[in-house]
Image (cartoon, rainbow, N blue to C red):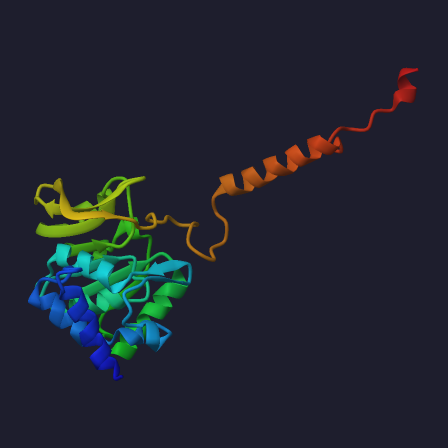
Length: 252
């Protein structure tokens, strides 16, 4: 079966009442246009509604991506920031709606940034800007953004991202340490923001990473080293080899 047919079938299933995650014409048309197989190594799985791991990150299932996009409600010409570029698929769908020159994406993991750039170019969206950044810091040189999509969870909305949101902009982010809720942040234009939970049910996303936590990174967090050293000292205490040698003859 041709990949274009599989792509239409995928979107049809996302629009069907049994899932009902695609409801707008813009998201439907964009997901039908973006060749998802350019972002997935196995063509056979490209249009299956399932997630999988790649380079230490989770590639979102099409239904999850659709939920985020519908909550974000992007419009043509919007300036968009994607935090957590991953393989680049979500950025491509946004580029189909807003225009690729209006879409910016960041990821803290350099191999993913390189993959996203290559995938977007192969799919015809090489105008999307993708950079290696700490997502919580956003992309201030291109702010303000009409739409910000965060594909990782945080306990509170990162202050820098709130500050980079346009006065009438919208941010979609999973919030919560344990149970997570997909949350919409509305820009207020006064450096503050109003939040309300989007009625889309709970979500489960990996946490927003900081420098040193990304897959394949050099250990920069000193507590990792300290924990390792404490474990080694505990092991030595069990054998007694950490004690200095006592010359008992000197006490006789």
